[in-house]
Image 1 (tube, one colour):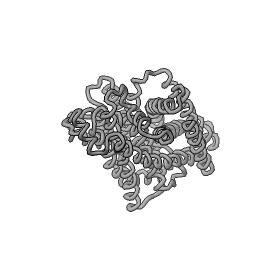
Image 2 (cartoon, one colour; image 1 turned 90 degrees about the horizontal axis):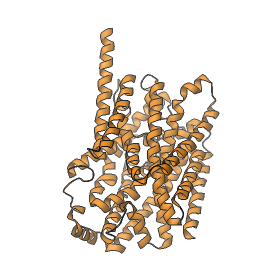
Image 3 (cartoon, one colour; image 1 turned 90 degrees about the vertical axis):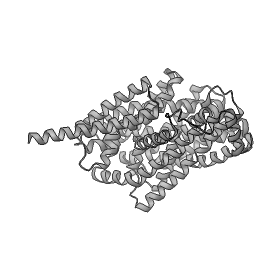
Image 4 (spheres, one colour; image 1 turned 45 degrees about the vertical axis):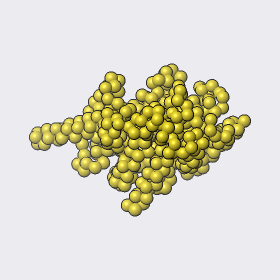
Length: 477
């Protein structure tokens, strides 16, 4: 009964925030960008919430359970250098391009900055749609597992509940609704931090006893000598994760927010970056709960259930429901961003169609809402037909992989004044995507190293082909 009451209250809250956002969302531009003037502090909360996502409460505790404190180099710490680079240095470049082109998606921006290329818009939209469908599929599965456990209902029904909630508020208020609900997610993140601390003390007596008991099981859990599961050594793990996560923060789901935030002076950008960094550090505590689960629940069959298991064992029922809904909310905070980014890029890729048939902005606005539903239904199909063991790979390919593929034409283009060519962008995206997927398939390197390799390939191809093409054109003259 407590679980159902909590779920109903959660649904009312999400839809209520969607309704509030809908009152300020009257056009397609407002649906996808909030009119390019969203509050910097709302942006800070949204960026931190989307950064944490379901990984912070499902995947990261699972890695903490299996491998120990090496996971602290990942989500909590490695985000921070990238956060400052993006918020303090890159966002002003985004805003300068947006002021010039009034783009409503990253694909639109890449298209404009490479000769107003519709081919690039279409290619970027197709990749984002496919790869984000993979990520959303994995997140649907994770949310369904949490809700089914909390409510005692079939997983598929739980996934449908989660999907319907997300679709309703996203189609209501677009990006503004996404950011409003992300503020709720931040409140839950802060509360979850205290719940995690309570669990650690209740289960093992505090942080000191936790590290002592974990080291007694396996010293590698507390004093890692390798970077497993991310890389071969600890220093290389940190470097590789910082590079990969910096690229990840240029992913379309985040970049959609960069183009939408209002102009910020340097001091405010520094403040926003600091806020996001401090909030991101809160995700350290779920990792330590995962390590705690390794101490008190050594035979756990699925490490990814470490945090939900600890919630159910050490929290009163009301707090367990609250914590579980917090995990669901964290998952929503990434799913909704991916839905908006995917649909924004797909809608702008149809630019030739809109122009040819003189489609009104109002019609495009309603098509945008329909695209949200279509993508969600596509992901639901994957949930039903694909085996669970593929979902971790789908999440990786659909997030970090996409960021690596776009490193050249998006990240480097921001800072490269003269810019690359249309063909340089097209070829770098296509070839990098093929190589990245192949690397993930053969799995010689781990996913962090594959992301770094993908970034390097993207930059080399984008710069190399663009310079060769420019040199050829200059020679002909």
